[in-house]
Length: 453
Image (cartoon, rainbow, N blue to C red; front, side, top):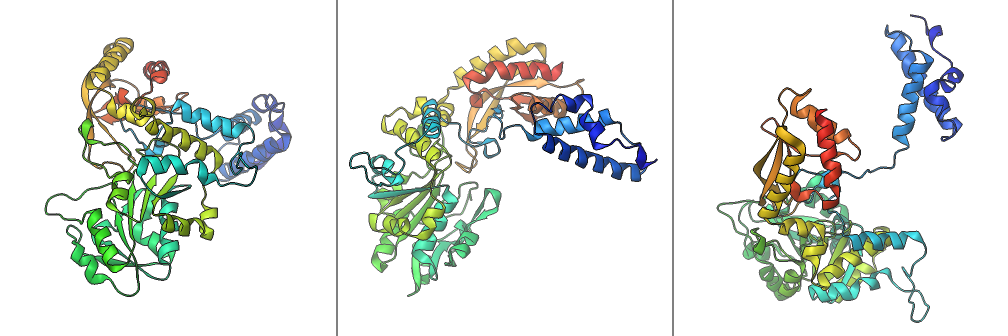
C-alpha cells in the first residue's frame, strides 16, 4: 500500500462530513483533528491496511469533533437502585438547591460582602447559623470535600506530632483515599492501637505520650466488621481526651442528619450526636446522606474551628460560591423539617414498597411481554451504611435472543440520550424505580424500548 493514496488535509476538510462543520467549529481545530486522523491512518497503511478515503477520514474527524465538543459530565438516569452512586455523581440535588446554584452563577452575589455595613465579610457566615442550629456546634467551617476537611484538621492540629487511631479504623475508602496517607500528608505521625476487630479506650490511653496531638475516630463508611468486635464510643474517647488535655476528632463521613433507624436501616453516626458527645472537631460530607453538593463540613468547638480557619491551607480548599449556595439551600430543608420530601436521597430512602411496586407495574405495561416485575433490593451506596439494603421492586428485562444479550441491552441503554444505567442480574437487565426521578420515567421507558428495537 502506498502512503501517497492518503488524502490531503485540504481534501478531508472539504469532504462532506467535515465541510458542514466549518460554520460551527473553528477551522484550525478541525485542521488539527484532520492531521491527527491522517497520521493515525498513515500508521495503519504502514501496517498493511488500505488507505482510507477523504470521506472516511472526514467521518472520523466529524465524530471526534462532536464528541469533544459535548458538555461533560452529561445527565444520566440512575436505574441501578443504588441511591448514592459515586460513579453517577452521588446525591441528586433538590429543586431549591439547583435554583440557588443557578442564581449564584448568573451574576454577582454577596459571597464575601456584609450587606449590613458594606464591608468585606466571610463566605462561611452564610452557613454558620444554620449548621450551629442543626448540629449544636459552637462553630463551623466548610471546604470543598471531606478529604480536604480531614487533611486540614490534621494539618492544623497535629502537624509534626502524633495522632492515635484504632487499627480497625485506619481504613481506605473509594478512589484510594487512605487515612494513613492523609495523616502522612498532613505531617502528622500515625500511631495505631488495638487490633483489627477489637480496640479499647485503654489502648488509646497507653499510647498517649508528650507528643500526642489528637485522638482520631474514623467511621468505617464502606465496610463493616462483624462478629467478635469492639470499638470505643465517641463519648469515651472524648472523656479520655479531656482527662489528658488532648482533642478528640471524629470523621463520620456520610453527613447523615436524620435518624436512619425508622427506615429499617442501621444507625448511621450523625454530626449532632458527635457534638453532643463532646467531640472537639467533627468532619463529614455534603454530597452523601446529607444530599447536597460536594463539600466537606467541619463543626466543633470554636477555638478549634478558628485554628483551622486561620490555617493557610483553608484558603486553598475553600468551597466555591455555587456549591455554597446549593449546600445552604439543602441545609434549609432540614431546618424547615422538609428533608424527607425535598431532598431526593431521603425521598428515595423513604419511598414505600407499595409505591415502588406500583411504578414497576406501570413500567411493565409500557414495556410489554419482555418485562416482568420482580422483588429487589436497593443499596444506599456512596460510602454510607455499608451492607444495608432496602426492600424494593424492579422491572426485569428478558434479554434472551436479543443481540448482545443483557450486556448488549445495557450498553444500548447507556448510549441513549440521556444515558440510562441499570444493573444486570441472572442474564436480565434490572431497572429499579427507587432511584429514577419522577420526571425521568418517560425518557427511561423510551430508552428501554429502543434498546430492544
